[in-house]
Amino acid sequence: MSKLTGKVALITGSGRKNGIGAVCARRLAVEGASVVVTDIDTSFSDFPNYKVGAKDELVLVKKDITSMGGKALSFFADITKPEAVKKLVEDTIKEFGKIDILVNNAGGSPGPAPLTQFTMAAWEKTLAINLTGTFLCCREVVPSMIGTGGGKIVNISSRAANNGALWMHAYSAAKAGMLGLTRSMALELAQFNICVNALCPGDIQTELKQWGLEMEAGIKGTTVEALKEEIARATPLGRLGTPEDVAALVAFLASPDSDYLTGEIINISGGYGLGNATARPTFQ
Ligand code: NAD
Image (cartoon, rainbow, N blue to C red; front, side):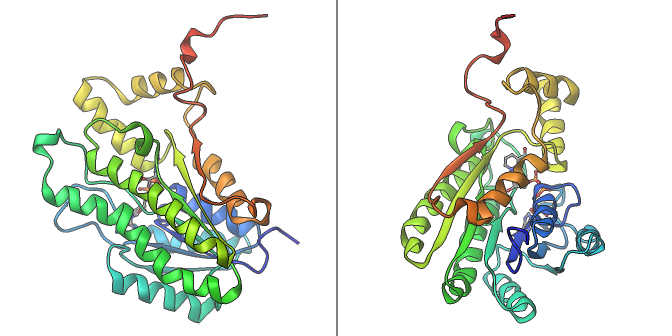
């Protein structure tokens, strides 16, 4: 029997085929969980240039999982909307009976800007997606976990929560807010056998990362490839991360192997920030 057999997992922001959320959903399904993949359908009308949404891809992610023999459902929901989250959780419980694992992966930001040019709308949208959305999903899912005797919540924060990120003020603040939320929920929910942990990924190769690097390359007058080489050089493990790297850690945090772990913030960044990886001596 696989580690997650009989468990039900809901993974937000899992509609992009090669995004962290979809890869996590596939991994949890391989471990035996029934999974619900969910995403927003279209981009936000107030931010037409912000590449968000998975209108056509979400159903393909679901099909991909069912074609490998997994059990999967897909629902569209904008996690910034309380009513939409409520319906998402109700629909999931109607079909699968419960929710044991919640991965709060949906996230992002309309884009970088210097502080004095940062608009109120971009600030609010970013906090809504990353922080309020996580809060709303937890609030709706937790009663089911309490009812079944426990659960696992994994919040996907970011290295930006700890280090900041140039011109990404709202994103850094929202991701840092997720860490406080993780710890306070871990404190409250331990009595119900619900473990709440957060991950801080570094540079993970996804569409979102590519978009961020394209913007950064434009601002700095360099190329995406040059930026990737720079990141790899600054990373002790010598490469950018993959969604599969993150999914392996999510699978661990969703499994009974992590039953004595709660309120933890785990970096997954190939050792980025440990020291100067470029000054490696050539010992034989
Ligand atoms: P991604 O764009 O593939 O995933 C984010 C998903 O969230 C998208 O599918 C998007 O449509 C969805 N989403 C956005 N707003 C939503 C809303 N209101 N309701 C529902 N869904 C919504 O990017 P990714 O790189 O796979 O990122 C996944 C998570 O990891 C995000 O939270 C991101 O902030 C975080 N992260 C990524 C990296 C990286 O380098 N890729 C680094 C640190 C943290």
